[in-house]
Amino acid sequence: MLVLYYPRTVGDTGLNSMEAKASRTYGILYVISIILFCLILLGGVAIYSAPHLGWVIDGVPTRSMSPTISRGALVIAKPVQTNSIALGDIIIYRSNITPKNNICHRVVSISTSSPLIFHTKGDANAFWDPEPVPAQDIIAKVVWHFPVIGFAAIFIHTPVGFIVSVVVPGLTIAFLILSALRSELSGKKKGA
Image (cartoon, rainbow, N blue to C red; front, side, top):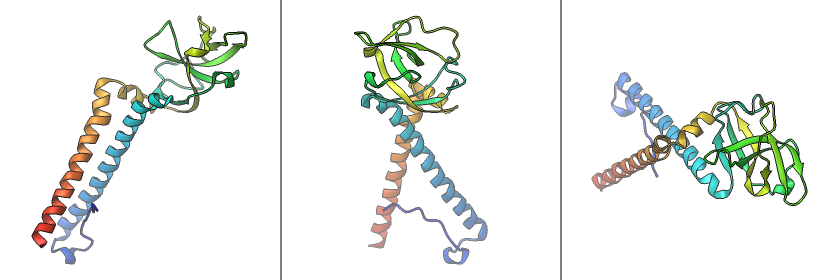
């Protein structure tokens, strides 16, 4: 078991009050940094693994869904059966106009003839989207959105963002765990 120890009283440790205070502060900062690295790592892993499970966790780079979903909002969308999509639902779909980017817009009309086709529109846009959306191009339905933190998701999708959110925290956590294990093992050898 890895234990973070910092002195509780000056008399028990042989440290003066300044050293004890510095040790407590170091201990608190150490725990906070581990928690932050874990949260960053979990966020990065979630964003990269969600598409493999049919989910979408991403940031909104435009204002086309304002005021409902603002630019920079984080959206979470779940896989959905296309026949369960209703008018007013916000969906994420592939577009032939912007093949590198998925679109997040509201369903404003549904053509139930075969094949099933959806017409969409951004809340801030004056007109419907120029292309209807065939059912096979729908990726997911938005179930949750939160303002501002989507900018982090947009950054995480870049190569530098991947390094900052997954590689650096992963290596840092591994280093800290290995250092603690090494200290624990060397302490046991000295005590034996």
